[in-house]
Length: 139
Image (cartoon, rainbow, N blue to C red):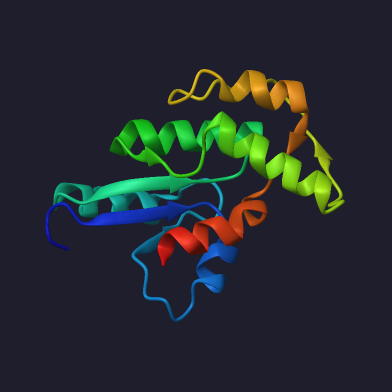
């Protein structure tokens, strides 16, 4: 890939499935990034690619996002407190069943307001909740 190529990285394979046919530059970690995924991202980073990362809005998802954003200087992709609040309100309007946040909170290194906002709202939002927005971004 040419230097400066932007690669989107997601946590859930559902994003890849939904993006089929769009030919976006998209890598999926399928949960916690494995050695294979990290090797691919390392190679892309070494060639000068940049990354945008999106994952689940739950504590393990924030911890994974911290690792990816810090290791690769990845830009958070729709992963800020305002994004979480918007998606949580959409879930409420759609009467989507919610999952309570459990486990100790994880601070988001890229947004100091995200963990307090998530704690206040109290629900986990998996990546599928943002699928329409992510696909829109991917064009």
